Length: 170
Image (cartoon, rainbow, N blue to C red):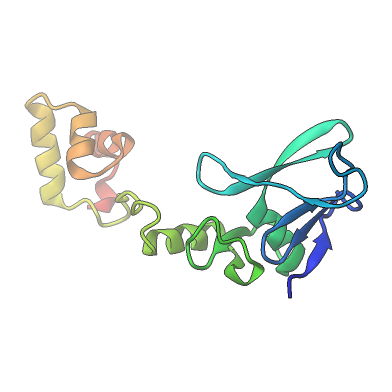
């Protein structure tokens, strides 16, 4: 059975269900004395949003955040909401969990929802051979940007390597 709870900060005005449906207790011209369901629509990233009205102001709220904040317990206020099945419109509380930003990105990448993270130039990624090749390209007129794109490094990393400031990495 669908469970309804008041939305924090909007008590007496709006309720959210554990299935991600939203209803308003604000009187309207058509329904002055009965609660009515509010429509949600996708935002530019595909998450469902609704506009809540209070004290003369509208505020856009993501449905999955409202459900998670109301039905899914969390201990850390810095956590992000993850859709377990990866479907941005499936906002049932059973499909939502609190994760760190890093976990959220990793899960999205593993499910193919986002592109893999860019290659990082971490310690050991620059070999003496690679550094020599980069210097050779630069000597022949290649720009730092061209070299960075060709080898998957940031322009700053290429710049530091060419100056010899990354000698400890090779």
